[in-house]
Amino acid sequence: MRKKSLLPTLLLSFYLAPGLAAADPDVWLLIDTQTRNLEIKKGDETLEVLDHVVIGRKGAGTKEHRGDDITPLGSYRIGWINDKSSFRKFFGLTYPNLEHAEKALQQGKINRDVYDAIAWAEQSGQVPPQNTDLGGQIGIHGLGSGSLSVHEVFDWTHGCIALTNDQIDRLSQYVEKGTLVTVK
Image: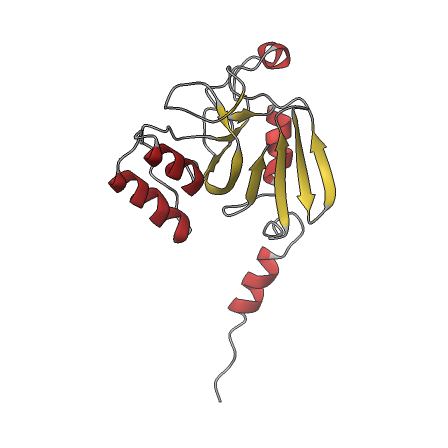
């Protein structure tokens, strides 16, 4: 008679130990660029509010091109996580999405190949190309060794959403790759 391995049970208990459990798949983020709040939500319930988030130097709206310092509005997923970022932690968003690509294609800002690559990424749950004329590398990050006094005074990012290091650490308890993020 073959003995059952305890390894699956041990691994399961390790992953479900307090503080190590995977983020809840029903958790999502709402970033309000008017009130400058980031709400951590579970369904319609607000679990926590992180206040005084910082956005792009030129505000939020329709991102026109790489380097325009605008935080793009829309719905995205967390496409990747960099725990060793110079900004402490970086949660990369799946920008540009299909909505941005459709507008850009109609306006002649991108070609059909770029559009198709963005569409494929969205349909297959992948990170879209990050080197298009629409920009990329948009995410939610901390300050790293940046100045808290600058953070408290004005919007300083190139289009990302910035939090204090304490806030990004708190946020990391709730999110994982695939978490929905809505920027309004």
